[in-house]
Image (tube, rainbow, N blue to C red; front, side):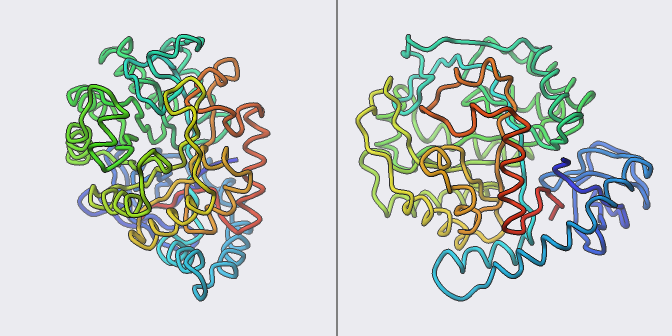
Length: 391
């Protein structure tokens, strides 16, 4: 299954390309290719990420055409705007994004971390955890399989704050993935140096997933020993200034957090000009200082999704895997409350269980293709197309 529909270039002006999808026109930035009207491209996150031939594009378009309009009809029928907060939020999602649901693959390539965050199972002091690092060649091979065999068009490269991967090695990884498996590369490396992020942008990375976790400095500095919230927020702002698509957000259910704090964190995410909201529930890990903390309710998380959509109609909003871990119906319910993005774990199976940021993570025991099939069945049932068309 392809997680994007190829579109036809019908206009180019000062680096902004107009792309046609079955008569629907969207805009995208072009920073990688020489293009002419009539060319076929894939778009992710508002960027042209791949140019393909007409011979490659037409069979994909033919397979999509009937399904594309069928799914739009289902979504339109389900997205009525009257009623409770969730229905209003879902109607806003449909108004600004149609039935598009971005699907990102995620490769968790190292569970080493120099940080000691109280809420995270891969924290430095968790001596019971079996640690692993994927070699650069294995990361590139995994990315190539995800893009060229499974059809992903956006990949998150995620690790703990592991400085074993220096600027040179990460630059090699990003450059080779862009060369062998063109896709939207999203970095989730933690609080690394600004110069490193700048180098990787120049190498072709275009997304950065870096959550601020909480907008309250007192909670942040208690749960992230030796770190201050101001530094985290400054790095997020610098990544945005560089040109990255910024994906950020917070944890729901931290000790001392109030309902008002969650609303303030939504406002903070919006004020950072975030391209994607990434937030989810705290799932207490037994090997952390927060082991005895109660997880938040499903309703609290759903309300946060709806409030985020009502506050920022144009943003992408992720249904986090931690929410699915909390509630088996989270994907469907989260999408119906205003969310429009998901991630599928494509980490090799031999490593997956060791990226133990919280226990009993949803989906890690399923083979990748089975996981894909499960998610596609949910999406099709509510009229969502697993694709990103652009802006």
